[in-house]
View (tube, each protein chain N blue to C red):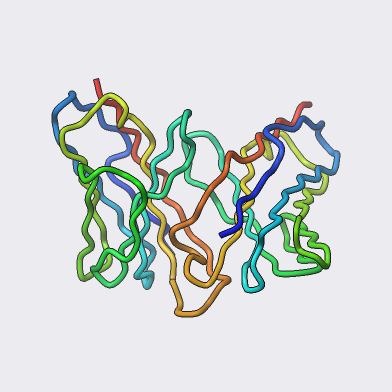
Length: 112
Length: 116
């Protein structure tokens, strides 16, 4: 599966929109892009998943350009409780919800 | 519906001992995956069980083993514990629908193992 690269850390302030970009240059045709959020001493939590263009749910939006070599997770109006590590993963037919490969993630710090 | 339950939450063991961790998946989920999380190595896949069979295995020594029961509950065992085995052990369950790329994993709270 394609390796992902994302910033190690980001800082933001409450109320701001946060965009975390992930690159996955070798993504395969059938692969999806999936984002998880993890708070300290808890298991990761699924945030959003997409294949192309834009996906939005009650928590975030995911933007995927036409070439699918990168994606951007957008968190609108973050709060202190959004401070967490965010992981970008590429998932395929054989590992959609299992055998996940996590990179280093992006540590988001939201300040008051 | 109940989430993924891992027991115990915390555990302290001595080098050389063995330990068994338990995971109860979400009802209806037949795939259970185990992960090890350490500050140095991050989140690493250990193995996956589906229908009582190990389907995939990560790059860990044979001291790490697991099994799955007919009710999909899973246990993970680590024998001859080493200091480096201190970690947060996470279990995740999923539907693992054949050919479906868009299922998600549901993680438990983890078991914090400390080896002294």
